Length: 470
Ligand code: MN
Ligand code: MN
Image 1 (cartoon, rainbow, N blue to C red):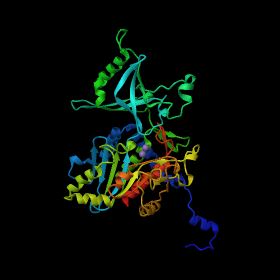
Image 2 (image 1 turned 45 degrees about the horizontal axis):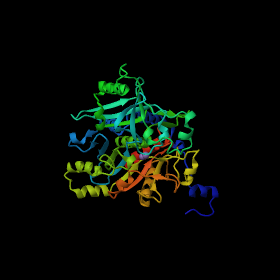
Image 3 (image 1 turned 180 degrees about the vertical axis):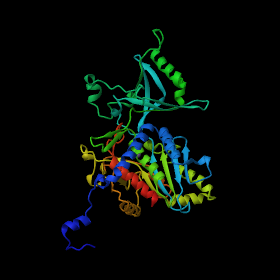
């Protein structure tokens, strides 16, 4: 214990908790690897704007690193499991006995967006439009008056699946949702609250405007033209939209933000920023003692329900494969293995916005450049619907992260009565394991252009690696 006679300045240093800026703790020698990581991360964002594209991009990276599809090998060393093309599980075997001390990183690769409805296409006032149904929590007004792209797949009854990406190439057309001009918006919009001034049924995509031919007697000439173009390139008829997963996302690439390039701006960073760090960490972990499981999952933004989400037995499924190859396929083993595992639920938190401080409780908030952000619990109204990590588990991670030179802090998502949100953590805790949320703090979360700090991303990646190597 520190004596009362110590210099008060020294005593303060020893007893007080100082808020750190992660940049102050990244040595010059790490700047080059940091920037090359950020370039890779930005291309992960640019090529993976849907859960399916993120799975494809992740698998490409994994195969380059020597990982093999578990269905194509008897080995269990470095393998992945492609789950419906919408989620991917990665297993890396450590040196310790396989059923001991598993480490888990779990993150999600779905992001808020606009899905096409199943009968989306119509013509009104000689303009062809797509109807949408938004997915996840969005502020609807952020999606109007901006270039949008169409991503997804159309599955045909004969089993073929055609991927579609329109709006990302320089030469591609883009799409948009036209807003109402301010001159006429007085009654229709300006007096209403933000929730109401763009109703969900007005989030319709401008898709075309040229008639098929000059036969003015022909009804729906513009719709016909759009369908004929889609049919020429993708073989689609109107009926095929029913078996399609087509998503409208912001068009364009992620960018460095700020004169000093401190930040990355781009769509879908919740939660690809953590997904990419998890992926890189499991590949880059040096000679890990214990085995690692990384789950990159779909459907978190709508509550993790659904076959490719966290509220399933995917962890048991994949570990079942692995254990069976070691003659350990009894269900008791997989349950014990999961219960003894330690898990980081890799997801983002909100960063304090200098102009909107009033929604945060500043002592317990996340900050841009605060390093790795841990959330002991999530949820709403008195921690409802969340997992809370135990004091012991937090203490263990403190030791690990402090020993590894990681700058980190713990954050709540906003003031107690302000709102809140949930993550995957509670579904992992179903297996009785220790789990805590860990990620970076994001500005403008769920917007078409989310902002993260490179220093935070770097701390997160190094933290995940340390976690898997511990
Ligand atoms: Mn998230
Ligand atoms: Mn989210």
